[in-house]
Length: 363
Image 1 (cartoon, rainbow, N blue to C red):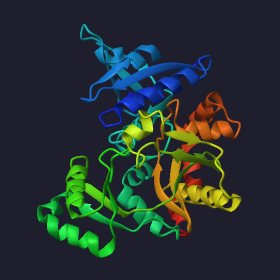
Image 2 (image 1 turned 120 degrees about the vertical axis):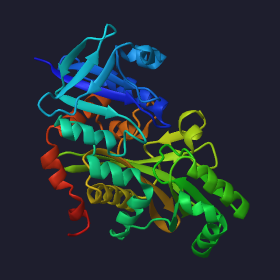
Image 3 (image 1 turned 180 degrees about the vertical axis):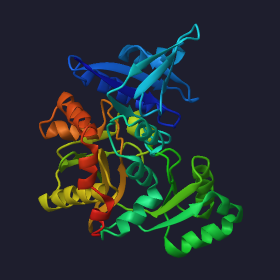
Image 4 (image 1 turned 30 degrees about the vertical axis):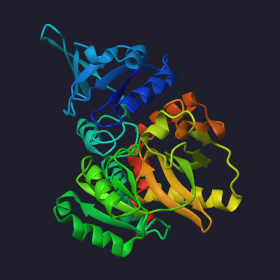
């Protein structure tokens, strides 16, 4: 008998379209002989609906679905509730959930909390790991305990911008120009700016505050942008290292997804000692945040060595996404990778004990 696999996609974040692109690729790689696939889409406005096919997701037709779909938090039901157009309801039991949601309300622990309440197995990091990894400021605080090099930073709260000049003076006292300014919890480089002076810093802080109430200001690290994929089940495995060659000055949202000149290289020319350091650091950071299932950990490779950048707990699965490409380079095709990730949903309690955050901090 087939198990029911719900794939949840879309969402209210700025990465809505990327989530849909990722979902289409995942749906096409799921073993349809083993799973009955249920598609639950969340519109930008937060409406939950049932989608019918990957083709409907690719075209955007799913957003016009008249069938509302809500995952019930009732642990006895373990089900999705559908509301038909005539107002009647039906339930469908869920065996496992694969969230394909990037950014706010999907990658930050909020929807994972619903899955936990419903006691439905799900793919990916849990509530804590998702929340602290989504928040770049808190991630940096955790990584500080590991002795892994990262960029110098200053945290700013949106309310502090009422005294903008005081904030700017505090930043200038710690970090030299140019600096990068990022919303602490936004994804795919939305709202990220580079500032070379006070005027640009003022504009960058204002822009970042449009996307989040917490802002991270970092020193500029000059180096190659490299990434490592982590797969956390009964053991934690790190892939090889890939390199991003951005078409823009930095790897912003448009450069990632819409500039054909941006390139990803899964076999870059990097010294073996740096590859092993990146792989080791990626696994250690994954464990420190209490990761489970999957993450992509990003670094810079500078003339002085490896510098941690950020961790993404629900990395993209688009045709140009580094996470599945790195595992393919290691001989794990997308179909096998998807199944491995689904398998981790059923061993979550055991897997999370392996990657408990206190273990990563030496406690």
